[in-house]
Length: 235
Image (cartoon, rainbow, N blue to C red):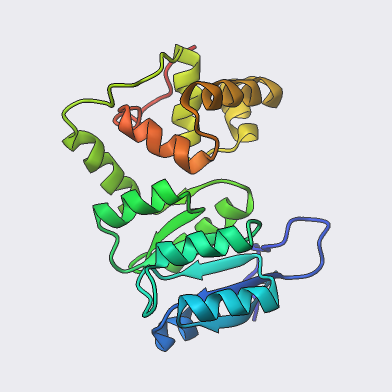
């Protein structure tokens, strides 16, 4: 029976979102596939146990999502991610790993993955990750977010080359780093989406970063996530 209340495909689309699972542990693949089978709006169309197989299956099946392990026999998962994005830029890639140490997280954020999820996470987190990525947001699981905070706390100082950001730009950047879309940020701050998009454009121009995951990493590096759990800074 399909789980109610969770449809992956945005309104107006009747075809299910196509998913490819890339992991060399078949039991893991079967468990993930069973989870997706319970959710309306998704169809697992393939499984790959290597980077080579992943590229072949994605070329054939043209999936919307790839669930990607970081440890593959013929390449690192992040090498696989780069090759997948180079060949199929529209695919959403969710890194799914049982070894989310600081080095892996740093590399994944720099590479620009769409989301990071620990294999120790509950099923509800996979659902949250798919929802966020479907909406064009970057998803970081609790373990990843905590590791990012530890990285920030361990740094002696922020990068030397830090462009000057206004209080408003920092506020918008902090909300981007928390995974909110422009529409959600606008609602939270009582502004128009057009205004928020202007702030995003200014942030991209000043930092040279354009993807939300890159801006999120930058926010961590300059210490904006230290108080991410508190209230937003006033305008």
